Length: 116
Image 1: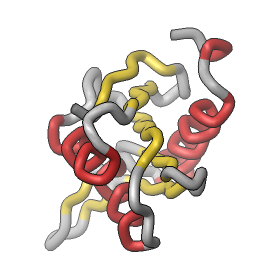
Image 2 (image 1 turned 90 degrees about the vertical axis):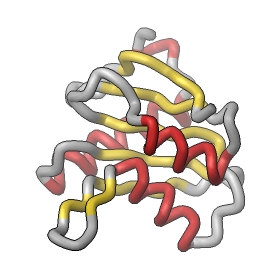
Image 3 (image 1 turned 45 degrees about the horizontal axis):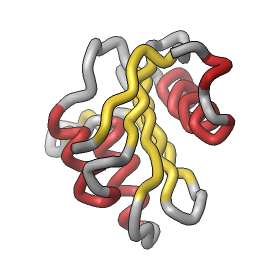
Image 4 (image 1 turned 90 degrees about the horizontal axis):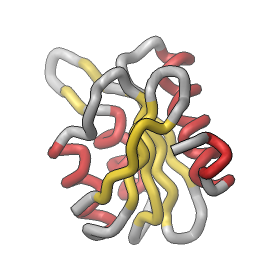
């Protein structure tokens, strides 16, 4: 998918995810957009007692802030696929059809999968 083919709102969450990754020096950055258009941005959480991927953290932030559903999600990572647990977290809040954008550290979207 070319950058110019992305919806501006999807480009925004990819940019936010990329910024979170770079700013915090973490392996992944993620952002989700809820059904009202609010965005939630997070990085990987790696504590001795708590391990969360960036996407799981972003979903948790959305839930903690009162989001009822998701429209889209993005993760910026070196991984080649979106982890099953990450897709499950998105699906739990937004449903199986929610698109999850997978972008490399350069911000280029390599794939779009559904949460389902």
